[in-house]
Image (cartoon, rainbow, N blue to C red; front, side, top):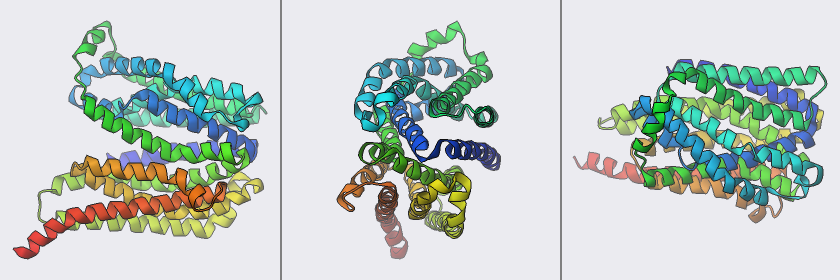
Length: 407
């Protein structure tokens, strides 16, 4: 199952990367920066609108597949109701000179799609909880392929502009929701409405996951937002391109996490559990280091070749981001270990560092923010988070090691 997921993810992200490259080449740094700024605000807004239901959806759907329809209705209600407050709040937080004037309507129209993005995210969570891997992979592939096809069609017809790029981005989320409803139509009926009141949701669990989800969205979106506010859309575009390629390099380790969870959960009570943890961490970080080194060597011709000569500065940003590939991989593995060991307090502490440091470091260390300092700050933040994760895990290793030597 993991192998199949890797295969489908590879295909899907390949189409996504092709679409992003083509779109970026036609829009240029400023256009790409504008798209990224609005998309970042939507990302934070959609997480806020989903109100911590991400892991709840997976848990409830796993326990009772027949309640999927009722759960989806609950998500729709929560996303729409919370967006009444979230949309004006995000507009107020995101408003800046770069997003005013002719761009203000693009911002407003984008923020109105926040509930759509939140509902689309809930579709993924419910499918994962129900273990509908075939449906999940099919929706993932079809969405990415159609999005890439629409981008190519817009470019070939000479219609590719920022408003069109954003409209196609919104359309991809609508496609996901439609496909979700199609594949799970048998779970939707009037009787599902009666099951809504029967769903038992843990308030504390929701709040913990809500905070964690916000932090992860904040970590990926805050730097583009700060760049558009305190620097320029060009700088936002440079950083967005470099970060997109760097994040793609982390995907293999993210997929490896599903294997690691099963491996660790199965061996937690065994004597060689500590050895298994160390082997998993070293192997995946070594793989990440190999990828980072390989892309460092080819980055000089790669970025301008893919995105155009105007993105040459993005090469420097990308090189500064490459260490983050290694440290994010290590941090994710530490997160998996703490998840298996049910150390939610440690997870929340680490995700707070991971979210807040990138927003603070450019101003504290460099006293300015541009594409290069943003990339450098993110890598430093990833390093600090990884070190903190290692420290917290070493503390859990020590009692086991001491007990082993005592016996």
